[in-house]
Image (tube, rainbow, N blue to C red; front, side):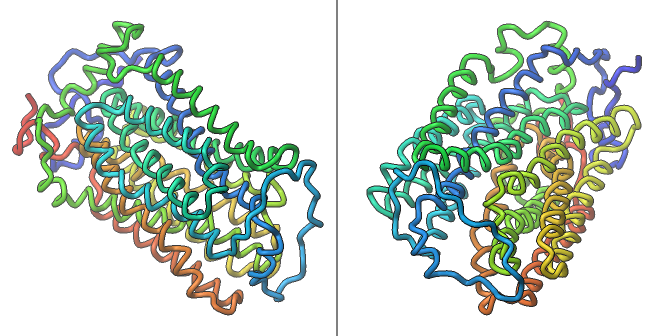
Length: 495
């Protein structure tokens, strides 16, 4: 069996140097088995962590429907008459003990959007702290904090809109550190030829969390009441935190039960990729074109992602007159497709590199192009489906599914170009990538004053154009090898 550990050219500028960025002059080490390995156990626990994280994030969007007095919602109705009614009669909930609030559409928008105002603040600080003290506790307490704040949601709602907005912003602060912290941990745990698989497994939990929590939140609201949505998910988050603290170690060296073979395999594969610099090379980092290639791609992808997440369901409700929230399966189907695509694309990406000898940058470019241009095409198509809501659901599902390819594209390119600073890099790119979630819906609302199909086509065109631009920019300027400034000295020599 051919070993996945091969030589690494020391030149940073050669295209071939990123082909297998592993060892240069050390003995070759056979890959450690996958089954029961410490690195895959970490991936699974991270998977459930991000599952909980996204369940805590999206449960409010479902519960809010049950929290708001329906008479207030009707007063703000902007539904178009271009298409016939598709919605089913509204079901009477089994339990109607949950308190109702007089919140209009604008107020609801502030409540849902307040999360991002906290989320954007802690991205870069989270990455920096993780690079200094590690990601285990930062990630753990980030999710724990979000879970605890979620438990207090019913109390905050009773105190008033302001209290609930502050609480959601605090949840955003907690979640903001999680992705940079996880990236920082993988810089010490993920062998280069297993990065796509390990990261796609861990981050796919976010998609499955959305898949499960959307219909489950609806069921909880129907049979119990909306307060239990926050209580149950909050308790699950606390249970996960206990498991995370007990079973996870910061690095392979500190893991108590890792096998000697696996530890040697991980450490040797990363030996010539990590930097021992104590200071962060901020100037060189911010002048790096490969970093800005990821920034542009991440921003562009999230613009379309949030358009699909928030605006297309609105389009289906107000134009096509079909409320996707009435059917939990249709709400969850796009995210199930994305979850499946993330898992499979991670396997495919690493196989292309390890077995077919594709260069890292080739794989990152191809997967990013598929994951960004594909959703753009189907987003534009969504504007030309007339009143066929079934086709709208199909396009939404295909668009979101194809976006899963990006998990093995630009999303993990931070670890390719600077594994020692991957948490900081993700904090930088995710800061920019949070902006679309804050401004995208506002721009869409301003472009649709009369709520017509033609106006919504403009919204979809803009999102698709931004996505295509991001894909092309990334393909032109991205790199697949460790950059000089990310090594032990500015000349790129490995010690």
